[in-house]
Picture 1 (cartoon, rainbow, N blue to C red):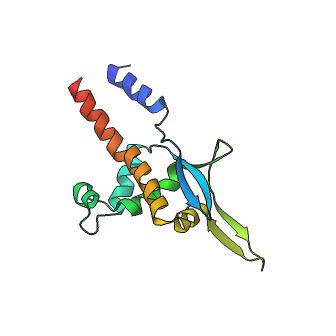
Picture 2: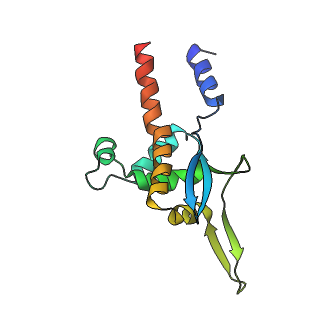
Picture 3: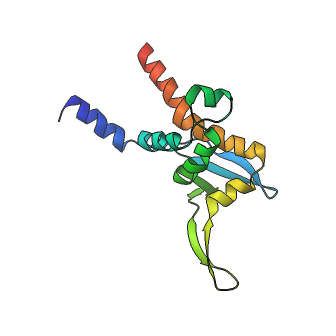
Amino acid sequence: MSVLSERIAAAKSAPREKCDPVEVLLDGDVVQLVFEQVPGDVWGSVTAKHPAVGGGLIALRYGYDVHKVVRSIAPLSGFVLVDGVESKLDYVKKKDAKDSVVEVDEWADLLDALDGHSFSLVADAVWYLNEWAPQQRIAAAKKA
């Protein structure tokens, strides 16, 4: 195995970085969410699907709509903390009161229910893990 192969194997087996719990307000209660960095190819494909709109700083610098990216990435990388334990939200099919099958996307419902400030906290956490922190690690490695 080459030196590069060993580094690749180590990187693939290392746990992904997670953020500290993000506290959001949901129906008057504080709910804690945790997000994990996604693989680079996932981040790249999602950012490519959501090109920048408007003239915001992130849109101009990075070329994607961060809020649309967050709506796609959060279900892939997010957990709700319930009594300190990470719990995934679901995309499920359920029967309603009329016995009809309905689709429930808990992440979409959660993100739709958040106030602007709480959504911004989620967006900041996801963006930090997948864009800002890796940039900073590269800059630090170049200086070392």
